[in-house]
Length: 165
Image (cartoon, rainbow, N blue to C red; front, side, top):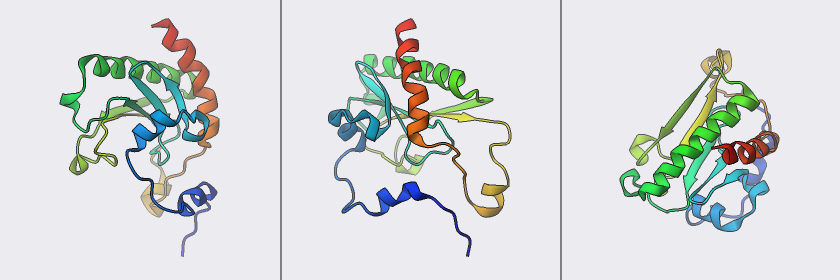
């Protein structure tokens, strides 16, 4: 048996019951930014760290507008999402120095949307060699930084970079 120590998973395991309703609408309404790993709030969208990241710094840009369909987004909401994604790229580049980034929107479960009822954009920093022997041989992805540490680095950058646009 292979073992991986992942103490941050205990909170998920010990949840009394699965969360009801839309994750993004709940996070938008709660205003518990530290607990929810929200690093930025704009007028029409917000940015949070992914609890199940592909890499350290994996962000999601989510609109306050609840829709599962990209084509149904209000045009001003879509424009702010893209402007905010540009700020996210700048903040990740300045704080984490990735060699590249993946940006994308998955519409529908069949397209890979884990939360299909609320459209959102992924911004994932990538580094040369970030796919190494761990996922290839052990089917394990190592995320080397706590979400709270990543959020602490990104929050001030989002504030300063969003003012500069």
